[in-house]
Amino acid sequence: MEITLHAPLDMHLHLREGAMLQTVAPLSARDFAAAVVMPNLVPPVTSLERLLAYREAIVAAAQPHQFLPLMTLFFQDYDEASLRAARPHIIGVKLYPDGVTTNSAGGVSDLAAVEPTLALLERLAIPLLVHGESHGFVLDREAEFLPVYERWAQRFPQLTIVMEHITTAGALQLLQRYPNLAATVTLHHLLITLDDVAGGLLCPHLFCKPIAKRPEDREALLAAALAAQPRLMFGSDSAPHPVDRKEAAGCAAGVFTAPVILPLLVDLFARHHALERLQAFVSDNARAVYGFTPPAKPVTLRQEAWQVPARYGTVVPFYANQTLAWRVEVPRV
Image 1 (cartoon, rainbow, N blue to C red):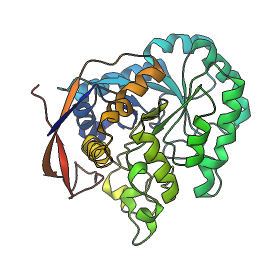
Image 2 (image 1 turned 90 degrees about the horizontal axis):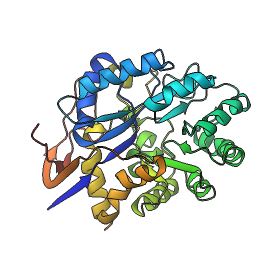
Image 3 (image 1 turned 30 degrees about the vertical axis):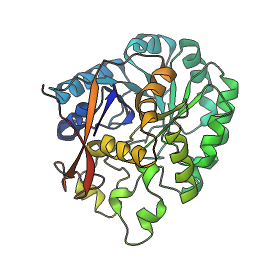
Image 4 (image 1 turned 60 degrees about the vertical axis):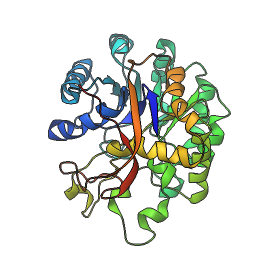
């Protein structure tokens, strides 16, 4: 059995720099036509010069695969001239509350103070992408941020606001109330709960931010994904860290899913008799939300068992050493 997806899109991806970029970029570039690339490097991507250099490095690392990096700027108090200059080269601006996740130091510390910049983004039709968490109790951080999304959705009705990597049923309910809200959801949040992370022996390779939540949240997310709700998009939040930063005190947050995304999504949708809606979830919804046409790139998966490697370079992948039922048919390049 085979299935072909047309221009699959990863709407939230971490590619890092240097040797790590060389390791992970080809894995995403093989399976996806394009991806929204996160700007939280060290230092972050805050200038057009740095953004264009990073894009060039990604394109080089992705060779020989056809792959379009959709670039983002790290949120700060930009002036109109800077945003106008960057606009042809970006798909959005990414807002991180200060210190809320990996490499988010220097993010926003005063959420009220950002509104003049949000008004500018609205006027220039530049989407706002948000890591929506507070600094409260870890299981409540997304829920505590939802009123912020609601306030911004009301105050800036023409601004597209993307709630990144949502993890709760509450976020899905908010998504239905405002047409200018959209959301991404990850593969791992469709499959795991906090029990998988810390219910037995601690599993550092499943530790991420936002942290996996309760079974009822996972079931709500899965139902919405399987139904291909129109403003819900796939975004992997695949976030590689070397093994010595994961299997360590002060474990880095991030799940590296890039090599297994499409095989696991096909298997998941097939088991729930929803394969006909996978195309919308992994591509069509994002095209509509962002209003863009990705490069034509068919990606075919075949029902054929394979074993996920223990590592890719220095990174342990999601489902390491496990056998998957579907395999991406690698194109001749």
